[in-house]
Length: 250
Image 1: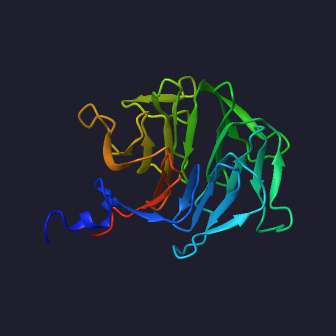
Image 2: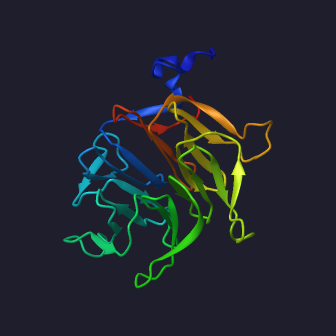
């Protein structure tokens, strides 16, 4: 096998990614079979697990969405209103409104749901809809939550943080080297990000690996998604959708 055998899959070293039909502006993956996205018109889509006809439209309108490995899905709309997906219980009204105001949301599982508000405030779901959110110290512009409780965030200065509040509530965020504007977390070992220039990075699982704990992955993106089982997706500025295949033999 020649070194450049993957080059026929796409230009710019895109052998790591397979293009999936459709157009999205935000994407989230809990697992290989739980992938959700929203488009520029706020329409909501759920992956069918079949690339031939990949997306099913789900009623409603959202600006950001978070999907967990256990099937949990949350979203926020353009008015910063918060919703949890209940379509498996009530197909006629698939979204339940939850008190609060968030601009970004992510769900790792039913019990690991995090969001940030328009001021950068950080909120964690209490698992109780009557008083749903607890404020966590710090300020972030994007957040990612994994199925195993892992949480990472980035701030408006593109600094990167990992949540360590279960070890040190007084200083709940550990600085990690790097510069990212978007972050996605599937698990402790599946963390992806996008930098301000659109480059895609995957965490090495070693904060001190040289001075750079990130491996650059070919491609350019505006959003990235990471699942608990190693699944990863990204979308670019044109709304094009890609699924990661770099961990599979070419």
